[in-house]
Length: 429
Image (cartoon, rainbow, N blue to C red; front, side):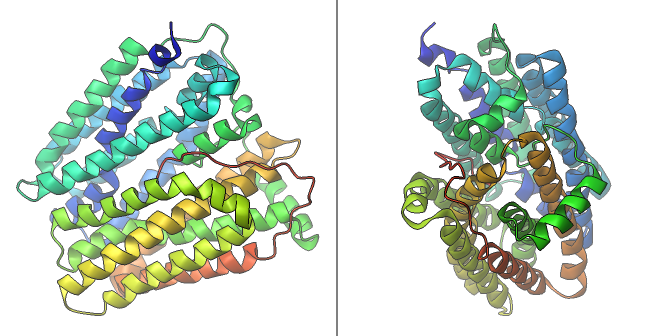
């Protein structure tokens, strides 16, 4: 079988990402339409993360134990598709929240087997282009789905959109069942941490990657000792921890904030889509830019730019004009979630790769725990700050955490002997 035919299964990834692409925008808007508020939205996203974090560990260990690739992907896509169909029939806020969390349980399953399939079905020299294709197709699926959502919601109820998304989920399930083949010699997940292209792609699908479950006592001991020594790995992880708190705060509340400020459902989807388009295009140039300027320098600059975007939207929310809010969001959101995010995420992945050393399992477990905890905390707090103080306060608070992250990452200095990596094409988030 030729390399092109072996990679046909990747189109299933595009179809599945089309199916789930609008969910993080659909869910908060639909909760508000059903009578919920900012607190309800925050709790729904908190529940999603509470499920997704242990699910990532569970599915990863299952892949290691069974060696399954195709069955796990089929289960992931098929189950998520049925839950999307259930979204159409959901009539209450709590039903939507529970179904969204259930999607988090199954969507987390596919990340690891997909990346392992690339390694196992492609010659080593073809890995960079294969991972680039995988990520590009995933990105194209999300972007196309947001364009569809913006167009569909301008004329019809967003509830009916779930039927079409579920259908695409079903198509992705059939494609994965027909086109995917189990490898003759399966690899362990640990192999993903040893190759820069594989690790970057895996973290970009989901930053929750547990090769080994960390112990809380061990994390605290390591943190206190390494902080006193000014260890660059610890500084990187703490800086990323603040970044994900900010992301949890802002990303949870950007869609409901825009909707509450008078933007139509279609316009909210359009703003989010603009961010994804800019992000995808920016990834094409992030690698070379980091090579010229250094990952720490790029990460800090990107954090400042992202914070400026958050503050710009927060200031626009002080106005009563929905047209002004739309204009500011169409500039600031792509700047923050597009350009700044792509630069920071690429630079951060390089820094994480440099910190792995001889114990990638322990370090990736700690990293994933910090990312999950930070996202969870941000999502939980965002509902209360938005409800009791205001959406603009939540965005400004997120900007403050980004500035704290930049202050910490400024102190990072790697030894020249530390290994380096440079991401290729990435999946937008």
